[in-house]
Image (cartoon, rainbow, N blue to C red; front, side, top):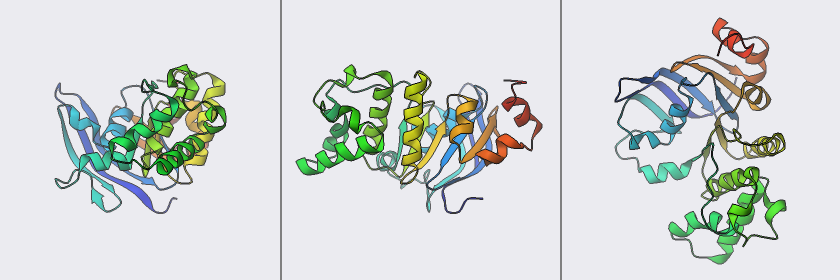
Amino acid sequence: MFDNPKIRINELSVGYDDGTQALSDVCLDIPENAITALFGPAGGGKSTLLRTLNRLNDLLDVSISGEVMLDDTNIFDRNVDVISLRRRVGIVFAQPIPLPFSIRKNITYGLELAGERRRAKLDDAVEGSLRSSALWDEVKDRLDDSANALSGGQQQRLCIARVLALAPEVLLLDEPTSGLDPISTAKVESSLQILKQDYTVVIAPSSIQQTARIADLAVFMLQGELVEWGSGEDLFSAPREKQTEEYITGRFG
């Protein structure tokens, strides 16, 4: 159905120290330059899977087995530099948290920490990332204003731009529109359609309806297991599994 997987997940299991099995033998190919949407009830393992893809779960007491191949590299290999991995695989969370700086400084801060000092390079990153997140036209005349003065939807797109400035290959989003109004949600969704042209996007959407709107590849997860996957159009029009059908028609969950 899709060519050129960017990420290949093989028999991935993740367990927490309290005995919770968050993921069980997940196998999935995540296509390049497409939107892969993980959906299902709370506790299904969506956030755990996202956090595993850039090894944020390393910060917790978890046990992990299986492999996650990013291109030709298993991200769990001992010689993988985790900081470099997290630049390649950026993540945006549900609650937008701008840094307490200007809009411009929010974009340049990570680059400056990485040693970038060239003004032209920083300016290009500001404009490019804000354009990619569909925010440039709204803020281009007030880049030195506080980021906290932006609306919730603008702050979320700023957080996306902040990740994009570091030139990732993969963009992970965990319910990025959960607190946004319909207009702001539509703007974020529109920006994702643009972003997938240059990035691999993996998202845990805020609703089933959002999954149906944006998913190139839809993945239904339940209690840590991957139940079914398929193109967004096929899965929502003709699900193969009874559990998937019952969930998307509102009969459970």
